[in-house]
Image 1 (cartoon, rainbow, N blue to C red):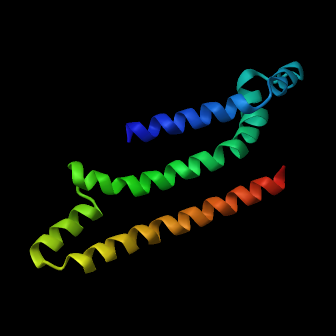
Image 2 (image 1 turned 90 degrees about the vertical axis):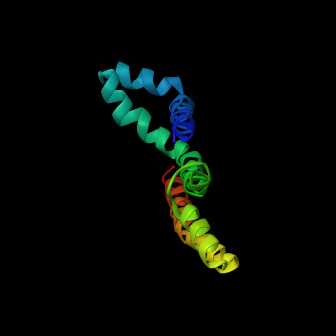
Length: 123
């Protein structure tokens, strides 16, 4: 989780830095405080830039959660291993686990794609 948090923080930071500095200068010169300028001018523009990398990070977070079961956590892959070791039905169990992860990631991917297209039209 800390690994992903660092990537998310970097994506947000780079999105904010991608907004031209003149936007902040124009907002400040029109009388907005720093927080108001960030809230009303900079962050709405940065969100459009940040959505694609954040979407990728969230999808990777879902996919990488299967690694947690191998390391020490109790997740779907852990229970898949447990069931396959007790029943000796490995193929069916792993197909079910893969389909479950597919059911988790496809709607997330489609939703992020829709959001990207919607924000692209707003530019």
